[in-house]
Length: 167
Ligand SMILES: CC(C)(COP(=O)(O)OP(=O)(O)OC[C@H]1O[C@@H](n2cnc3c(N)ncnc32)[C@H](O)[C@@H]1OP(=O)(O)O)[C@@H](O)C(=O)NCCC(=O)NCCS
Image 1 (cartoon, helix red, strand yellow):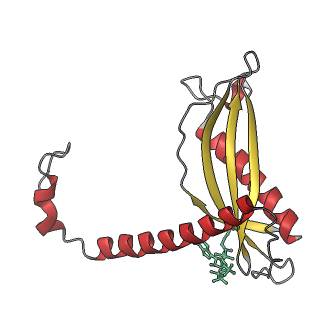
Image 2 (cartoon, helix red, strand yellow; image 1 turned 90 degrees about the horizontal axis):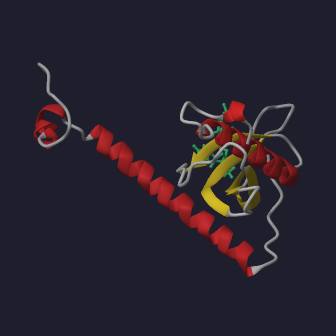
């Protein structure tokens, strides 16, 4: 990681890492699909450890799941000290990519995924579960938003670190 990737605190910008992850997801998904792909969603970004200038960053990517036109690529990011060889897992995220037909710009069918090992099967099954959970979460979030009644819910703000103006 070079100094121009750093933020004011001297650590690597999260956006730099996200950009590298997006590129890795693209390479992995488009190789499988044999066509161009777009990023549709990123499941859970959480930087567990800062990445330092001078560290060597490796991104390990695999296609974990394919649907009809979508693919989920799991990416594990590891930062390594060049001097000591110490490796730190900074984050793992799941990028949903969709294969598109270059002429019509519409989603296009991708080949099925060959699950050669138990680990491959585990990743596919986990991706199915994650999709289910994401759907349920999205529904719950939508319900929470639509059922929000500001006047009735104002007492919930008691004890929160906010100051009520003249609402
Ligand atoms: C992705 C995109 C093609 C989906 O279009 P759509 O009309 O919703 O198409 P579909 O409903 O047929 O969905 C296509 C696939 O995307 C998946 N998908 C759509 N929205 C999704 C979302 N928010 N999260 C996860 N998967 C999603 C669908 O489940 C479907 O998967 P499947 O074919 O494996 O069953 C469209 O939203 C798009 O082009 N988005 C812009 C993407 C882009 O430009 N990204 C670059 C970053 S700016």
